[in-house]
Picture 1 (cartoon, one colour):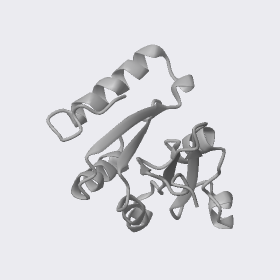
Picture 2 (picture 1 turned 90 degrees about the horizontal axis):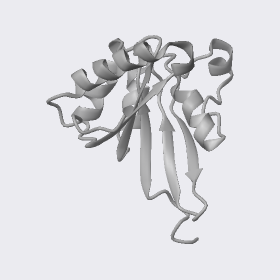
Picture 3 (picture 1 turned 60 degrees about the vertical axis):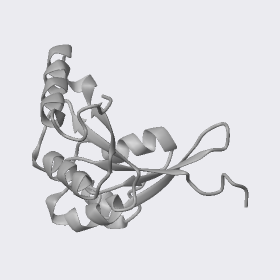
Length: 151
């Protein structure tokens, strides 16, 4: 195996159900992390999923997609426990929701120090709504270890 055979960084999603975590991972890696029949039928992640993000240099980043539903918070915690960077996903048409806050708290409790934030579904709202969501996100991150997170 080469030195690039294993991910050097693990990025894990976090966020409310139906905010687009799985679709985002599929868009950037080409891998659908919902592999279970029940996930396909229900249209929601139940278990953690994995995908490699391979750059042209050969460097690999491991991506972990976690469920957003409150019933599967144990699965989210299992997936998040080994990540280096959190990827908080917030849908522009919903904004901050209960699992958004819960997942953010879990990342903090697991000492995940780095956070990226992605606003999804911006095609469903106008620019003013996106600005409102950005402000909401900045407010919940303010005075936390994530206040410098990149949107």
